[in-house]
Length: 135
Image 1 (cartoon, rainbow, N blue to C red):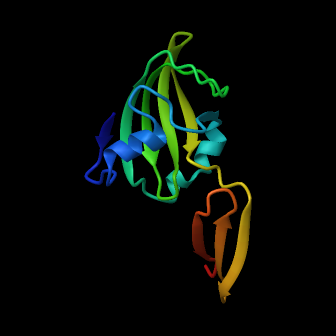
Image 2 (cartoon, rainbow, N blue to C red):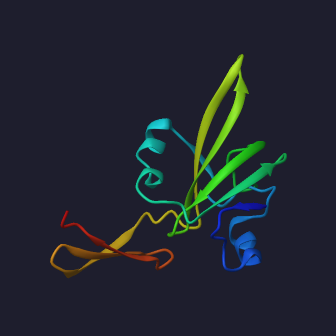
């Protein structure tokens, strides 16, 4: 594991327990399309920090996509992230995009806490985010 940023996780060992170590894929790792990457929070929020990993012959018993190679991972404030890879395929390099998350935050409760201000809470992990929609 190699953290690439001035900002690093407060506890690097706890980070490795939650997200895996330098030769394993992070939780809920899956390939996404270029269109989904273009619509991701990568273009809205700055990552909290970056990490470089070399994944070697990883086999996830839960059925996650098998992947071997170099990854650049961008971690966000809510436990989610985006990863990039470049693979040589058919005479040229092809970019690949992936997402990962501690929790996929699919079902959320919504509470209005003010004019155009709402708090969304994930029912699976209790992560809460307050959003101002008054733009």
